[in-house]
Image (cartoon, rainbow, N blue to C red; front, side, top):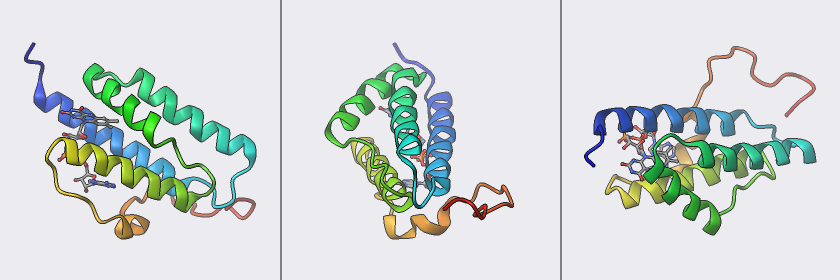
Length: 117
Ligand code: FAD
């Protein structure tokens, strides 16, 4: 079936935004519980992702490249890497992952609560 490419692309942009912003805010020194939460989140995100074709492909990406949850920079770097895997498959340009540090601001205005990070 043909589907709706515009809706699929909008969903993708929104989804990547949530993912990258989540990784950008993940603790620098996560607890084991926080690490497990991120791992679960990524796997459930894949499982429940509304575009079935996308979810199926992303499942294979996760099997090959499991989520990196040891730190904020590991998570953000991994997120950029797997997004580039998807970019490549879709014929999109590669994103320079060295720029990932500044690219995703949640606008929360509370960067680095003193007890975390
Ligand atoms: P997007 O790829 O949505 O990226 C949005 C913005 O993020 C870019 O403009 C850029 O500023 C930034 N960005 C780009 N690359 C990176 C990176 N590596 N790291 C950080 N930021 C970056 N669509 C399909 O048609 N088929 C699929 O199989 C498919 N699978 C998907 C799987 C997942 C898990 C997700 C979340 C989306 C998937 N999509 C799929 C949607 C697709 O990835 C795009 O989101 C959609 O095509 C819109 O592309 P875009 O060019 O606007 O930029």
